[in-house]
Image (cartoon, rainbow, N blue to C red; front, side, top):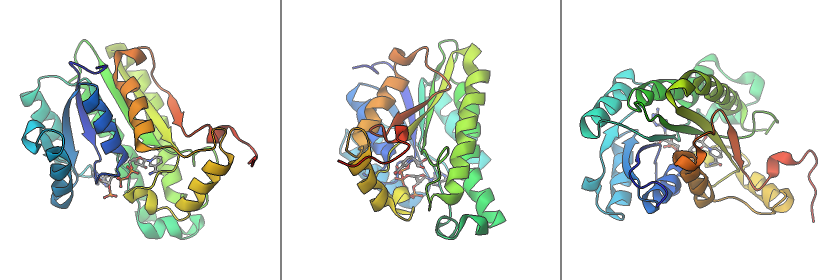
Length: 262
Ligand code: 0WD
């Protein structure tokens, strides 16, 4: 029960395969009180069905939140202030890019597609951190996001999302620096490739997973559960002096300069 007494907001559950659902399940197991946001009515139906299996949809506050809409973001944190008064942790598991901008060559990414991907996948962390920090009070809290290591290395097909993740990781460091005096910690988990809705939008996901299994130091892919357990660490007091980090949950794949098969 590492998260007993903690109140956490999970953003980005699209379905059962979502990394956000892996995180929510681990948080639930560890005794956290949970609230959720959903992007639209279609995804609310999925979320409600998932919540029914873990105690009933009415047991969890849920809020509509398209992160492109400032009013939605503001309403989430006002709603949590009314409902809980404070907040201990936020899991930001949100990203989006047009399929076109993921599949066409990098040098053909459109201006509008670039702006869209950066707005949803990177700017949103700033807006969320602003709202969350205002609810974290004297005790502080933990905010974390999900990234992918197409930032330091080129992963063909990750294209505009690599730029968004680079911005996101930089935001983690600036937010950690600014919010640190209030004991608000900001980190990122850099996960290996996992089959999810967003993951499937990246051309070559299966190849990336095969490569991980064949060449990562641990010779295996990672799961939503692997990420969920590291998220528990980040939301818990065990990580009380950890901020501004990108923590890899990728079986060590990021270490390798040259693939070594066995
Ligand atoms: O291999 C992977 N799957 C990896 C994912 C490896 C490393 C990192 N990540 C990241 C993703 O980039 C993302 O930041 O993990 C995060 C969660 O992604 P996921 O669990 O892989 O994918 P998914 O289940 O699709 O959840 C992402 C969700 C959206 O789902 P869809 O697929 O319907 O776009 O982000 C949400 C939405 O629920 N989302 C939004 N939420 C609010 N406002 C918006 C928006 N405008 N757009 C997308």
